[in-house]
Image (cartoon, rainbow, N blue to C red):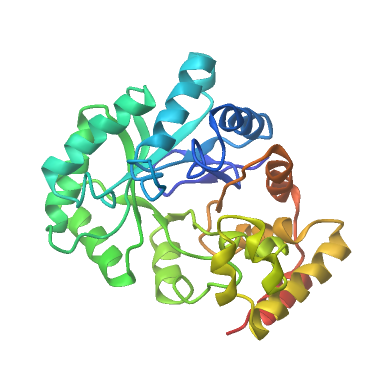
Length: 316
């Protein structure tokens, strides 16, 4: 399996990233362990989480996903840790808000403790913090790298202008640069990434690891009418996708899936994997059947006519 570079960091990822937002939430601890084991067995090596996961759940406070991953790493031992990369994020959790120096330092120590590791492979700014100077944020990340607590840094939810400004600040100030970007991007949600942001990432060799690669599950094809919205905790979001354009996208996915002996989810992820600048999309699963469906996308190679069909079906 061909790995893709995470920017210029020297780190590489399989074509799919396992999303950890579900761990100790819609996937209980035992299921989370089984999912992590199966993902690694399938060739996935990058696991995505954040300190805020899953603070939005009643009774949760945040840090649940990191804690579950940490317990799994401890149970599996050093040999497993050497095979995987862990990426987590800072700045969105109300308990540790913003990208100021003190908060980044404290949040990193907290994440390291929950994860039970010495070094975070990829530490990402979860969202932009315009109230904090970019130099301060990048210098804080630089201190963590110098201390051996972080190997590389990335950004999430940054605009083109702010990502460019951050890259400029890194270059002029001798500070570490964002090697990756996590934007919202999938076959339905194309506007936020395509265009200037995509061009910047390609020009600067930024590894893009998009979230919501399956549009919260819509692109799996299981939500085709209002009656389907109760199929998962995310079903309520599907109304915004189930329109004429959404149905055209599903029809395109069905056509390519039928011709490729694949599923709509596999086709949607394979489309992302072939888009400019993309290192690997993030996708999460709550059971082993879902996970097997997702990881199979790493072996699906869409041809140019299939890519063109999907591009046309999803044109906005």
